Image (tube, rainbow, N blue to C red; front, side):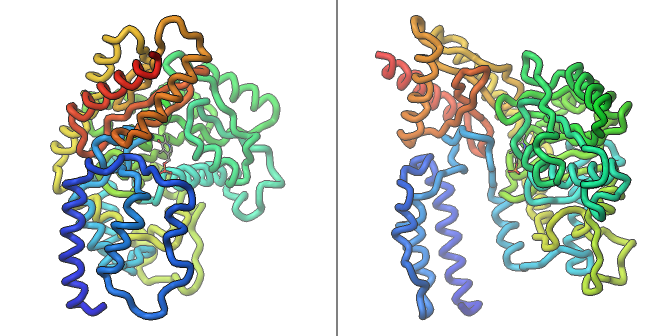
Length: 472
Ligand SMILES: *Cc1c(COP(=O)(O)O)cnc(C)c1O
């Protein structure tokens, strides 16, 4: 493809992109294809000769689009959002055009220095203390693994990278019963081992019970284990519960345990002064992760990882073969030493574009609206006697179920599972579920970039109607 052909194709593609954005609501939110359906439509062999871009776009529409679930539809209420926005997409086009590998400062100084500045912007926007430094990573899973590995190194006086974990005391990691599965994955692959992940019981609001944490750590110490890392969650995936950082942090500080905070989705709410309470106890945090690629309108991937001990992080990950030695080492940030992969995309550009396009006030306004929608939805649900709210509505997630009179728990679970599938199969909205205290729970997340309250009301009307038809 020559630059001239590129220009023509790209103009047409931008038309395709804009019209997708305008028409996204006309697609079934959740793809209805069967397993294998797309695979079987794609030729078994690659083409031997060059094909036109217009053929490619034709197949995109005919083969691929039916197999897409529309995360950017305002009728998408499932999981957590994975939002994008026009300024993010535009920056992503530039990132792909430049195709820079941003592993060292020298391999693109602008990328390293913009990243450093964006992490300062974000740190200040969410209210982390000024002694925190940040780095962009691909996912919260990777950032949490990086935190666990750093904590492991620190707890073993920086010997485990060299010696392996065989020699020393058995390490222990703690998180709440409601914590994300990425923590268990991190503990498994860090060599610490799943059996050394201690899941702490939660209080009534599904947040970690600090007393139980204290008891678990004391018991472990008595039994000769070495507590190494506590992972607190701000905004659990099931119900957006917020673990109390202050009492947890005090316990960590007394016992010299690394405190990592997983705020993957809810971290964005910290840009609102009225949600700064979630960071109460921030002085105890050693590392912190949140995903602008979830609720901050920056398309995947873009994870912000902060630590006040960058020295230990770098000491854990630094490796310096001859071919990576540069003359600027020590004067600048070589972000390849701040995480697992060597190669890095120029993701800071997306953040710069998004934050400048929305402005911090524009971001606050959108996030505040989403939180208000959830509160309003809770109000609508509470008006219906045959529905129940199953967890506190803290941010942008409402957990509820249909519970008509005269049905036992088992029947209610079956009804709600059916309801969930009927709603999703309708293509009109997409919800996902969790299980709370044995109860099949519908989760509705009001955080999609373009969701308005009328989308929420329309979804609620559909849920009511579908539920009652199901019962009758
Ligand atoms: C989404 C989520 C994760 C995982 O995020 P990835 O970036 O996909 O790895 C981890 N923790 C919490 C609380 C989450 O909501």
